[in-house]
Length: 149
Image (cartoon, rainbow, N blue to C red; front, side, top):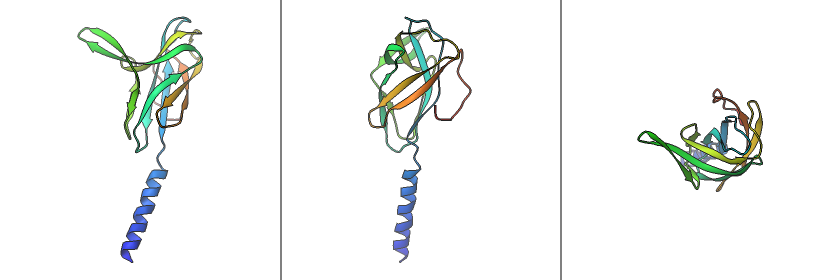
């Protein structure tokens, strides 16, 4: 009887743990002002609250010709930027898209990005559902805010 009770309690605990997983969330999405026809960049925090790894495979927006994943790294005294085909997202991992690091490159902007404007970017994952992100245009990174953007 104790064994059955222990198995039952273990099963309930595991079901509750799975049910409480939030999936993937995006916080603090922002971009700097940029001119129409130029390139821009989007920064944010990506959180995988799931026990399942995933992969960010693409992103889209109506305000740019295309969206690419880029990673900036110092090579001696020179900043090098490399295009990436996707961004792996391990289980329970956080990935920061920040100036001088990972970012979404908005190629050939169709409109000017002015301070206090907002626009949307859709993130496409290998397994998880698409996430539509509201991006705020600002001169510097926003204060940390973990409400769903």
